[in-house]
Length: 154
Image 1 (cartoon, one colour):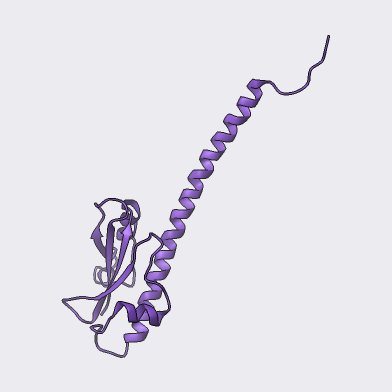
Image 2 (tube, rainbow, N blue to C red; image 1 turned 60 degrees about the vertical axis):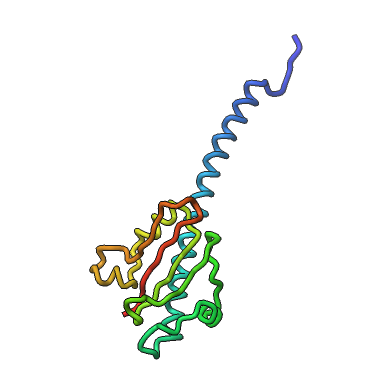
């Protein structure tokens, strides 16, 4: 009787099936890690923007002199966010001692996350004793078209 060595077709299909399952799991983990990294980057950049605005305009009684190009240039960061949208700065029309950081270009799930995140230094969060997040916005648009606003100041 002749001895044969090697792998059968069934063994090879089994190995390929196992590799496929592992690959699908890895893709899910990579996607989650990327989403988490973008959210952390937005959080860090908003904190940097707020700190920069307060340092630049802290000596004034109000934020009515906010100019997007000037502020972002002085802070030294880009107004582009990790989602492909932009950060915007504006003065609260009802109170010039408050400024609004806008975040555009969000997909629906990240918009919902950022709108419910506790922005502890924001006016809304502080006035509600931590009961609301401090962010407002609309997350019902198509992916990439959602935006939120967070008000900071006195």
